[in-house]
Image (cartoon, rainbow, N blue to C red):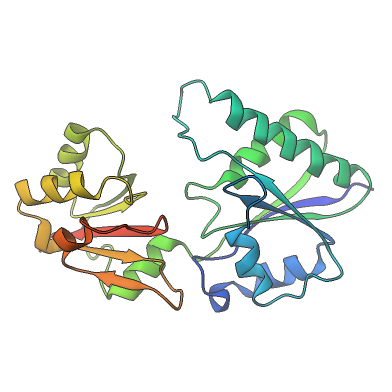
Amino acid sequence: MKGRFYVVGVGPGDPELMTLKAVRVLKKSPVWLAPAASKGGSSTALTIASGLINGEQKEILTHHFPMKKVHAGKPTDPDVEKAWREAAAIIANHLEHGRDVAFPTLGDPAIYSTGFYIFETLMESVADMSVEIIPGVSAIGATSAAAAVPLCLGNERMVVIPATFEDEKLRDILEKFDCIVLMKVHRVMAKLVTILEDLDLLDSAVLVERTSLADQRIRRDLKVAATEQIHYFSTMIVRKP
């Protein structure tokens, strides 16, 4: 009997934000394969999971996934695709031997998660695969809670986008929607501040670094924030008055 593959959302950082189901699935899965941003580096998702679950009796693996852009509808970078295939092969081997495998992933698997790429890659190579996606608290929701800023009320429209969009596309989105959530802002803060200032939206924006963690920072003076090194795990909410 083949094992089952679980993609498990472990939330934005605070282990207490993991769902009861995520904890249960991680506890019962004998193998964890966790994503790492650098070769030989640590896994943030694994650190979160280990905050509540003792992994001493488990086989815990980490796999490096290159931090390169993936564009929908366009060819994937060969290094990224290679990492997906390698991870899928490792998982498939355990599944064939009847072992369940959990893939802990930051936030919610449905939002910019490597977990779905692994799932799709596995589906191409493993017949009759049993899989379950465990949703988690997203960085988006946790950022909203930390900043006490709602994402949408009444008939308001919200959009979630990577901040690395082209300037004109980003300007157009900022003008059309009531609430804009910007992910991956750490490298483009100066550009964002300029655009927000041009659109008279600078005072409507809030930035949260390392949402839900002990060293979380809520930044409302974005001009100052743009002059500093912003953490990779940062999310910005622009909510029009």
